[in-house]
Length: 134
Image 1: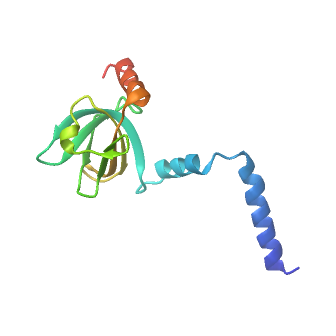
Image 2: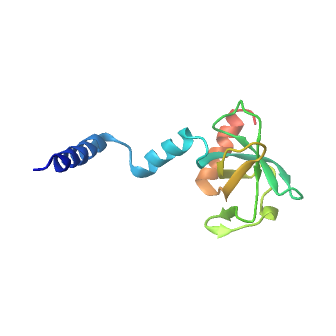
Image 3: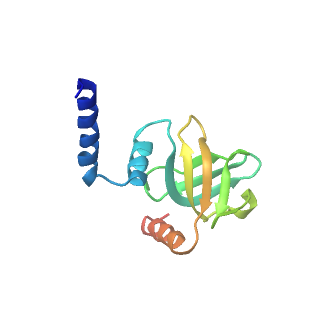
């Protein structure tokens, strides 16, 4: 057996054994995304302001309640949806529970997706906000 093949075998075995107790790929991806600046991040909260002229929304995070509301720039590339259906900025108002996928930027965050939350998830976000006095 060649040395390169042995090393490859050890690497593969290590990956298999080391990965046995790790989080799934989705969870691992979320951990990496939130830990590395410049990669997409997600946050949930309530919309506190809508600037239709500037195509921006401000969201008060329920995951970081001490932080001020964050402004998110909405571009033609920003996907906005509710229950898998596309919506527009007119469908978002103050108090709307949302999940935002974005990349941190100077000024308003670069926003990839705004999901208007409904049902149980919307209730969870509203309950968290209420507990935090938002």
